Length: 176
Ligand SMILES: Cc1cc2nc3c(=O)[nH]c(=O)nc-3n(C[C@H](O)[C@H](O)[C@H](O)COP(=O)(O)O)c2cc1C
Image (cartoon, rainbow, N blue to C red; front, side, top):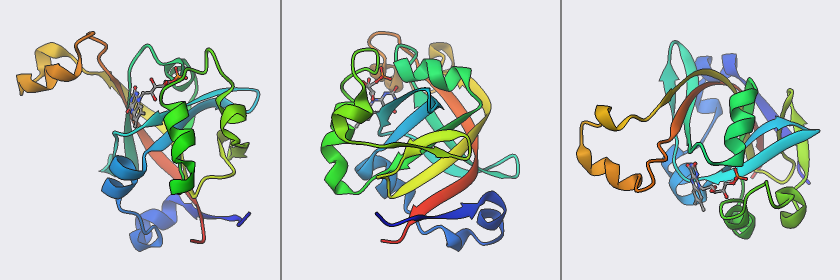
């Protein structure tokens, strides 16, 4: 298996071209796993929404997690989490991790994924790209603050996402 090359946050700020990603392609089409916790006790789930950019002078991601997800507990409790992006051959794994709960399954085992330490956070050895992220801010979507009422349609069960701003501490990438 090819090894990861690491891009540090500093390098990402000084030379953004070091990271050649298309966030729309990666998030909307490819999807990814959000993983919180430690190697002893972690959980992972598929996400298909999210944002990447710059805020408070740092490269950041935003991820959006509904409170009933088991992963929510891990992301809430820890300072770090990862985003793991895979090539298309892992589509079935992403479907599994996005439709079953870690409360009922050992998802990594079921999907043949190998959890691995990434600077104190947990990601997966089979990933193509892993973002190591540190939470800096969170807020909940509130119905009374919706400017466009049309977005309420995403919440028939009133399970409003919690949004996490997290700085990107580093990005691990494999040669394609
Ligand atoms: C393509 C796809 C994208 C998803 N995106 C999100 C998301 O952005 N936020 C979220 O809370 N759930 C999302 N989900 C649902 C969770 O992945 C799913 O509920 C999962 O089973 C939660 O697992 P857990 O209980 O082990 O955390 C998505 C599911 C799929 C299939």
